[in-house]
Amino acid sequence: AVKVNTTAYGAQVSKTFGGFLASVTPYAGFLIESSNMDVDYTYEVYPGVTTNIEFELEGENSSRFILGVGANVVGLNIYADYNFSKLNSANITLMYGF
Image 1 (cartoon, rainbow, N blue to C red):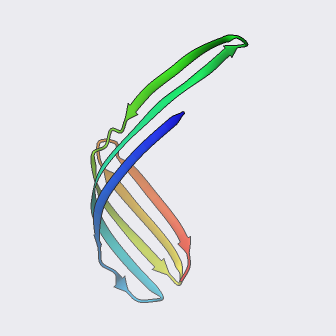
Image 2: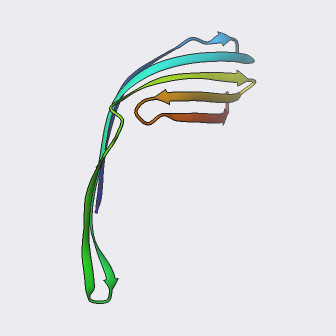
């Protein structure tokens, strides 16, 4: 069985410049987070021979700071942000909608 627990609380601020046809939105945020995963299962090496596999993983990050920017041109939205934490990450999102 695999059991995963994650929790994140955060806040973001942003300001949009422009209008309906085109706009740019810089944003920043801060999150407090925790995560862990418990794994426990029986593996059959070959018929009649099994071994129990059990371990726990704790998430490395406890908080993160986010800086990003979004752009909208006639319904096409692109967002890019970078997460500063113990394990840094980058994200790019592309969406279409009004």
